[in-house]
Image 1 (tube, each protein chain N blue to C red):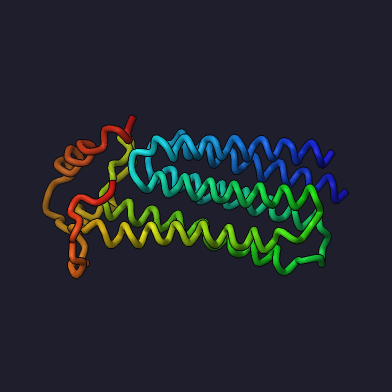
Image 2: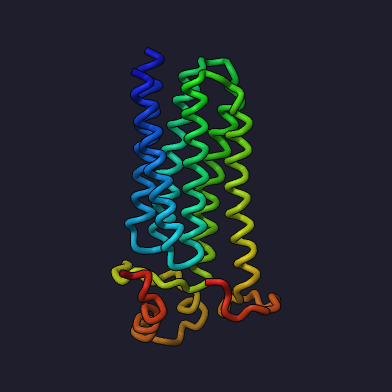
Amino acid sequence: MSEWMTSFLVLTGAFLILIAAVGVVRLPDVLCRSHAVAKALTLGIFLLLLGLWARLGENQAAFKILLAIGFQLITIPVSSHLVGLITLQQNAPRWRHRPMDDHRVDARATTQPPPASARESTPAPGSPSTK
Amino acid sequence: MIDVALNLGFVMLALAILLGAVRLVRGPSIMDRVLAFDLITTCAVGMIVLLSIRWRTVLYLELILVFSLLGFLTTVAFVFYLNRAVPNTAEGQGKDKAKQPQGPT
């Protein structure tokens, strides 16, 4: 019973981490990649640590495993959020088919230029990222 | 049963580290590399978890804690460095001295 649960949790967690890596390679943009890292990687490492807990038994080093789970659940989304913040501050090149431009720093600061100028000015420095 | 699952997990985590290394080499900006390094660090933590599942030991839990906190610390250090090095032109943080106009990107 414990072995079946451990193997199921390990396989699911490793598969989710692999999905996160594929997303980091395949997605077109820094923000999309941080999205892949923040969600799939967090759930994958969470399931791996739950598999370790199911393997070791309930009350053997449960506190440290819960501490590790808490650290992972806090730190990975926070680091991904910081990456997205710095990307928005630097006006990094973004995907061609991005849905909207709301949180751009220059659009919010100036509010004067029409969106056409911002749209034609943004993909000019970003030709290597948009593929 | 559990050995097969652990071997499959090792293979998947090694593939994930290889894909993260691909993004680490050909990432266009520096934030791509920071994300890829975060992914690689978390894959290393997952490999330590798989090893301690295989050997049924609790000795490596401190190693797991230290690795996860070090990965977070590297990301935060990079973000603080980039936040100070690159002058943001629009927001009201003009108190930065703007000593590097181009930045490391």
